[in-house]
Image (cartoon, rainbow, N blue to C red):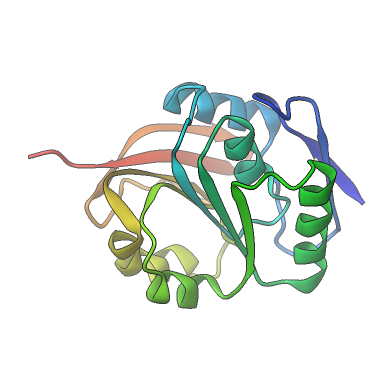
Length: 180
């Protein structure tokens, strides 16, 4: 089993364990620290969606920092089982909901609206382009989108990159809607 630690909030320093799985790249500690500095440390009451939840690092980090609701979507059974084990390890925070689903089907069918959407899909599979038209339906008007990708992203639909960085081969971006 691999591991990653939560870097801030209520669950700070807790270790999440996850299996080896093709395409699974947990967001490194330093990148998560940067992201939550950009967002502000307190996500009190935010509704977050972690598509391709994988190790759970982003979703559990959001819950640790006070998010009111975190929906973690994952399809791979081994990885899903590890998410449930980590949820148990953290004493089942009530804000966290783990769903086995396909990311596109989930986005196309959900009636929920989110303040923050995490997108960290497997690379070189065209996921971001396929998800882009569905994002607006699941996002609140002032929602932010966080994306990790193999290349730079300037925009996704109405969202424009407002902050970005690079760690190794990973480009990470915070996008917000253009204000008129």
